[in-house]
Structures are given as structure tokens and as C-alpha cells.
Length: 186
Image (cartoon, rainbow, N blue to C red; front, side, top):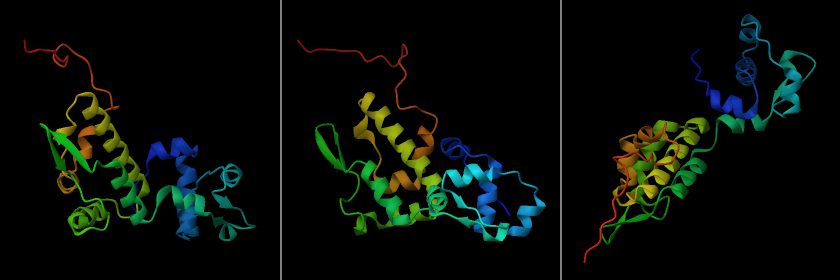
């Protein structure tokens, strides 16, 4: 079994990798593997955080919806969230440029929606990372006055554009080459 673990999510909710793997395997009902791996989860803390309801035996433990919501979500909810962050239109050289259709289910958004679904599926962690990168790009472009160069939604999704803004905190760096020069016509 190959399992991808987002350490940022673990830090945000305050659980260890053992805790996560324990909960994941309980959800998958793979009790044998839980015992074989010799995991050391803090079950009392997990119950306090409402991630599991402890029973008398391992097979009686119940994974709560709070845990499932952290790592999986309905795709449609994630799609609406992405669109709520993605600009509808931008101004470029004095004219407006449309980046996506207003209606989330419009035919113009269909190819981007299908591609996005193939990328994230129901992985809420991956989706949250992409939305954070989109927010970084928007903040960076607004500060650099380059929002007009934003790619259309379908192109943005197809080219995995968010990867370019993954390690940027949203603030344009001010260096000697990035300082804007103010010029005026007389």
C-alpha cells in the first residue's frame, strides 16, 4: 500500500504520522496491518479531537466524519471553492479579458473541471494546496501589477500553473531589478 501523507495537515491538526496511519487503517478496516506495523497512536488525544470514537477492541473503534473531512471532500465542493478564488475577468491593456465562465457547470468550464478532477479526485489536501498556490499567485500578480497576464482557467489547470507559486508567500520581492520606475509624460 502506498499512502501520501501531507505533513502540513498533520501539523495543523496536531497529530503524528502514527496517529494518521492508525486512523487511516481503521477506516480501511485493515486491523491486521495496524497490529503488524506496531503503531503507537495517542488514542485518547484522537478521541478528544473527535477524530475517533474508541470501543472496547480495535475492531470496535469508529472513525468520525471529522477525520474524513480533513482528507477527502466532495469534488463539486472543491471545484466551487477553486472557482470562487479564480478571477472571472481581468483588465489587460485597457480591455477586459474573460478567464472563465461565471457558471461553474458551464460548458466553457467543462474541460478544466474534468482535468481538475483527474488531478485532485477527492483529495482535499491536494486541493487546499492548489488553492493556496492560487492565492499566492493572485497576491503576487496584484502587487506586481500583472494580473492582466493571468492565464485562462483551462490553460491554468492544464499547465499545472499553481506549481510555479508553491514556494512563494504572496509578496513580491523588492530587489534592484524589481523596483518599479515611475515615469511621467510632460
